[in-house]
Length: 109
Image (cartoon, rainbow, N blue to C red; front, top):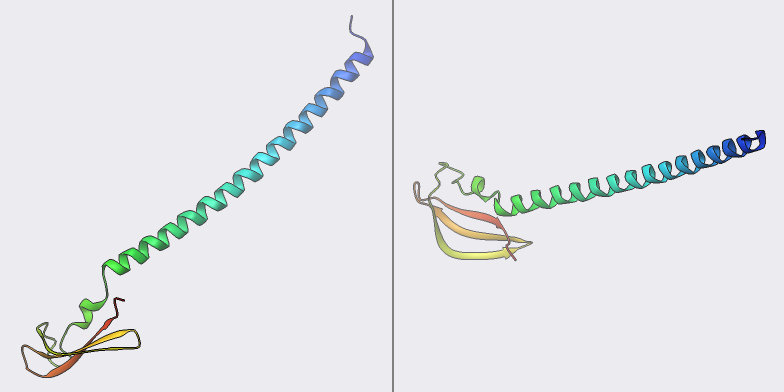
């Protein structure tokens, strides 16, 4: 037959097991939160790298390759190329209106 002391001992053991289980659950939740933070940082940096790759693959030069006078896209280089402060400056003239202008591009190097 089960005595009152056995019953108290079982209740105390049960309470101890519940505390241990609660502590384990809290540690798991904390670890899960740290993992989520790390994964979100990795996703963000990956997205930023992807945007950088897209910017590098599609330079903004397309909008700059127009004649400032007639907006023609025909550019004829005249042979003078200079590198200044991280830019390439290419002298040329418009194929449509024949006016000289300088095409400025980001230096690839």
